[in-house]
Amino acid sequence: MKANIGITAKNTQEVTAILSKVLADEFVLYTKTRNAHWNVEGPDFYDKHKFFESQYEQLDDLMDDVAERIRKIGHYTPATLQSFLELTHLTEKRVQETAAKNFIKDLVGDHESVIIFLRENIDKVDEKFGDVGTSDFLTGLLKEHEQMAWFLRAHL
Picture 1 (tube, rainbow, N blue to C red):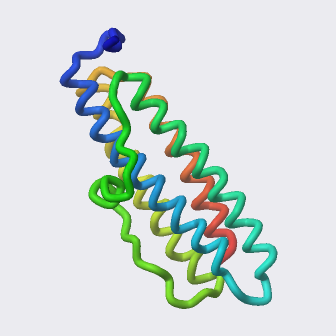
Picture 2 (picture 1 turned 135 degrees about the vertical axis):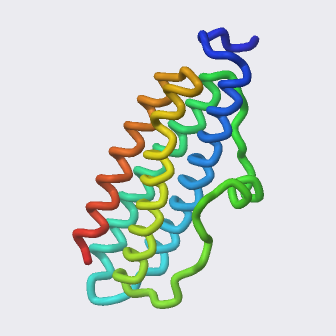
Picture 3 (picture 1 turned 135 degrees about the horizontal axis):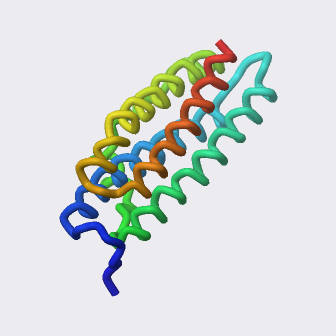
């Protein structure tokens, strides 16, 4: 049954395209944070290993929330690695040096890219597509990424 939520099908499709990019970014960022968790080395190994774990767990929850938002407005989520790599704004490059500082710098940049994309789309989703619910949802995601980026920057 189609969702009848007071937003045109064309507009929910446009919003879904934005959310799909957000989901892809979340997935790539999650994977890169897992990589940092698995491969970090150095005298602060244990602390950073646990820190990266807390971050990827938070990203896992955010991914699920984004996917569920897409379903709530009546569409299906992208759910393949290929689709995520086609949709993401992030790069999948691997940090060569395994010191925590190198992973953190890369992850901060990715969070900041996500923040910028969210900021560019919050008003558009509300004003152009008439979806205040998703606009509010994106604002919440923005706050989460700002906090995660701040926590990462605090380690540099």
